[in-house]
Image (cartoon, rainbow, N blue to C red; front, side, top):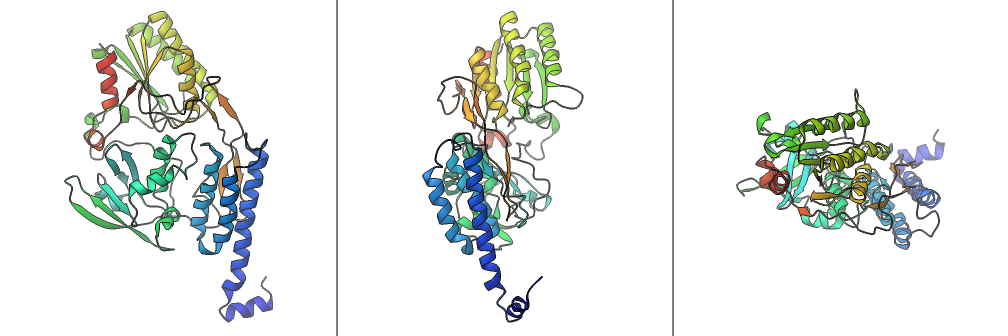
Amino acid sequence: MKTAAIILLSILGFTSVIAQPDRTRGWSNDIDYLLAKVKEQHYVYKNKDLPPTMVRSAEELKTRIPDFTDERMLIELQGLMYHLGDGHSYILPLLATITESKFLPLHFYEFTDGMYVIDADAANARLIGMKVRSIAGATPEKIMHDMVTFVSQDNTVGAHWLGPVFMRQRGLLERYGLAKGSQTALIKFDDRKGTKFEASVPFVPPTDFRGVPKMVPAKNTAPEKIPLYLTNVGDNFWFRYLPEHKAMYFQWNQVQNKEGETLAAFSKRLENELKTLNPTLLIVDVRHNNGGNGYLNTAVINMMKNFQESQKGKLVIITGRNTFSAAQIFIGRADHETNVVFAGEPSSSKPNFVGEENEVVLPYSGARGSISNRYHESIPGDTRQWIAPELEVRLSSRDYFGNNDPVLKAVLNKYGK
């Protein structure tokens, strides 16, 4: 209950004099709480001093609390977590109780030839297929360059995976001069013919925002024209035989069981199909797989080993920027335990990495995040930043919007019949 003095000050228009110190104290306490929890729980830093850059940045952030909105503060807390050097220690820009963070209802993707809109809500569907030249005055190139020292990541590929998601956040765009409380962002585009135009896109509250959105088929594509790698991204695992290439294509999108079938049962079913059809090539596509339960990997590893040992088949794994966490454990084990060729682009993690979801909730803001408290070592002594694909192929906007899969095409051309 307000005291008489506070009520009087509110009437006289001095509410901010009372509220601001409380808010500053609250955010400052959240920063201290976060660093204390990192020191207590993080796999690396519970046994050594916190990174000096993180400590300095935290102290500097405290001095900027009065200048920043709550949405911007959430973004800056995530910037602090970057200094821990792993992709599982982070603060989410959404889900805090102190504010409803808003974001642009556009799905951006960084192709070899630039940043494009590949999906949008109904009100902005006209923007799908457009190349982004700037958002709120900042170029995608500038923002993505900055993501390398902002996004929680195991390697720099993680910045290219997660950077386009953060580009949607109103709090992040305030870093680039977007006015506080802006209801729209001015975005400049090139259409597919190169014509320049601009649009003011409204920020929206989060609806069903669950993690990093996976790729979707190019809009208005007839079902029969959708390339294989985008036909069923929502299914945890499935396979299709490609008889013209004597190849079995297995797409694995999440290291999780699904209703009606476990990964172990699926692996046995696939193994039986491999024995019946006797392909010369097994392709395992984990481009959309951002993890799950690493303990479930063994059944798939054993299936691949049996294929190589009993059928003398060729094994190719397709990786991408979305290959992360338990999927990284899988490809690390495959690299160590099988004779495999990797294709596509590097994953967003290392063969050996610190990583585990371990929730932290900040007391003042209600911000949610994770502090990694486990080390995964798939290949003892391996210090690579990623497993470099022997057959490296990257996706252009022309390929995507043209419904082509240059990665699968290259694999089949080189290793298929």
